Structure formats: structure tokens, C-alpha cells
Image (spheres, rainbow, N blue to C red):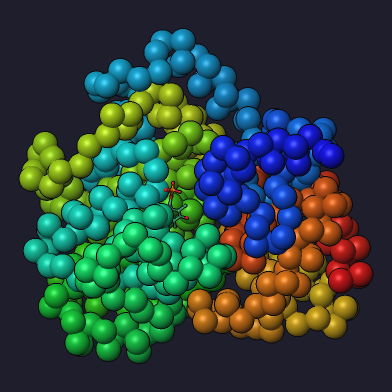
Length: 425
Ligand SMILES: *Cc1c(COP(=O)(O)O)cnc(C)c1O
């Protein structure tokens, strides 16, 4: 028995499904997961000593790759001075300054410990600010495991076909309106009917949690103008897209400013960080400035701030976005060719450094389109690719991430591996 298998058997006796987050379990592809011993750059190593080119990148945070020297170096340096103070430190202020200067719509920011906390808090704030109850979310968008948002969600909820989840009473989701992504007419109708009661619209400006789904620009523009006209708050959940689509995230990429922005993943540089921010007008409603309560024992701790700060500094200095997009579109184009040669209809969606392959004919513009993919074919593809030393997300409904640590050699190696895998699919 491999060491991975042995350890995972033990893990299953100790933790539900052997994991601390569901999609890690590889269940949807019918395999046992890797148990990882270390990672560096574009590579992840399992406890049996095998190495893989990693396109999961811890599900998004590692835009600089694993164990980036400068990030790790700064974490070490800061750790020597204490890991948490429970009181304001200078790194928090530096990090806040970075976020405020990167995001035009953000004048004030509050750091939390995960993307889930960020979206949960943003929704609370939007409801308080508007004095309204209803919230709008889109099918296939995932905003963390917030009770009121676990309806028709993406990521693990979608991977495991969970319609909502037990443990969330109907009353809690009774104010949640679920709309269709990229459907301009649909969202107009919802606003005509409920507009005056809608506190906020929360959206992934690019969907990463049903696989990659790229927004139609008129859809995002419509969300902006409807929320403005009806006095609702537009929340961009930029937990994936922030500092990924561009340094200024989706707001910069699409030239649309939201009212509140949720951040996570990249801003933690591999440590647990989330954030929400917006105009002073809204954000000053948060305690202790205002009445909307939200707190966190470890929020803004120096270690997490150090990892995030160094990551943003490197991104600012190296401006890797064009190069990342070039590598990603190269993979996309090559995959188009490979599948075409094979005579297989697939949809390859990509933007900036996010990409995914849906095993169905194009287009995939919404959740409904994504769920019609052939997940058993995906599972086969995943498993054969893993055998060839390439690790993509173990689910049809997750994005692959290209990082600055992926060299052209890695990319070419990946394309070759895929060519071989597709040949005998
Ligand atoms: C990952 C993710 C979240 C949740 O973040 P956690 O840190 O896992 O709680 C929220 N929104 C989006 C868009 C995400 O991709």
C-alpha cells in the first residue's frame, strides 16, 4: 500500500471524509487523494515522493507558486517578532494601504480570516446599510459556506450535487433570490418585481466555482446600473479574481466599480486572510465606527499580513499579468487543437490565469450549461493526467490556476501530457 493511501485511511477515521474541505477528497473522481509532504514553485510532492505540476495552487491563493522565497522569508522574519498581538500592528496598516490603493472603490477595508467571513460580513453590512432583507445570488456562484448563500452554489456544493444543505433552515434562505448568470433579461425581471426590497446583489465577476465562466460585459453593466437605480448594494466577490485578473481585480479588468468588494485567497499569500471593503460611507457603519458588529480574534494578525503584503509587493513589482495570460491562452489554444484532432466536443473557457475544460460542446455561459458536462469523462481525464504528473482540480467544476512559478517548460510539458492522455481517452 502506498504511504498516501495508508495515511488517508487513517485520516478517514479521524476527520469527516479524511479532509478539512470536501473537494480535497477526490471523491468526485473516484480516487484517493494525494497526501502532500511539501511543495515548491509549480511542484507539489506527495508522501510517496512523487512530484506533480500543480494547477490547483491551493485553490487560488498561490499566484506566485508554492513557498515563494520572498514570501516565506518575510513570514519567518515576522514570526520571530510574534505571531499575533490582538492589537493593531503596522503590517495591517501597510496592507490596508495596499488594498485601498489597488481598488478604486475601496476607501476602507476590514480584514477577516477567510473568504467566507468576508462575504458573510459584506451581506450583513449591505442589509444594514439599505435596511432591506432580500439578497440576490447567481446559480453556480460560490461565496463560501455562508448559510444564506448555500443555495444553488458552486464548488463542492455543485461537485457533490448538494441542492442546498441540511442544517440551513428554510427561513434563513427565504430572503435569497437565485438568478441565472449572464442572463440580462432575467435579472431585470427580478429587479422589476423585488427591486425595492433588494439589499444587495452578490456575484463572482468571473465564475471560478462552476469551472471558469466568463461574464458577458453587458451582464455586469446591467448589474451595476440596476443596483444603482434601485439603491441596492453591488457586491463583487473577488475572492478569486482580486489581484488575479489584474492587480486591481475584476473592477480594473472590466472597468466597473462595485459598492462592496470581498477579497481572499491571493491577499493572504497562502495564509488565512479575507477582507471586505468599500466606500467610507458604507464601511463606517462597521463597528466600532458604526453599529454593524463584526470581529475576529486573529483578524489582521502579523503573519497573515506579512504573507499577503509580500505577495502584493511582488505582484506590483513584477506585473506578471500579461505573461500569465499568455501562458494560459497558450494552454487553451493547444487544448482546443488536441481535442479537435481527437474529434471530441469540449468547451475550454479561460481568462487571465484561470482556465477550465468542460466535457461538453460549447458554449458554457451559465450553471445550467456547466452541469451538462460529462463528469465521468472528466474523472478519467483527471486520473490519467495525474498519472502523468500533472495535477488539475479533482472536479469538473473548479478552475485551474496558472502561477508565475509555471515556466514555459512546465506549460509545454503539461500540454504534451494532455496530448497523450486525450489520445487514449
Ligand atoms: C474560495 C471562495 C470563497 C470562500 O473563501 P474561503 O476562504 O474558502 O472561506 C468565497 N468566494 C469565492 C468566489 C471563492 O472562490
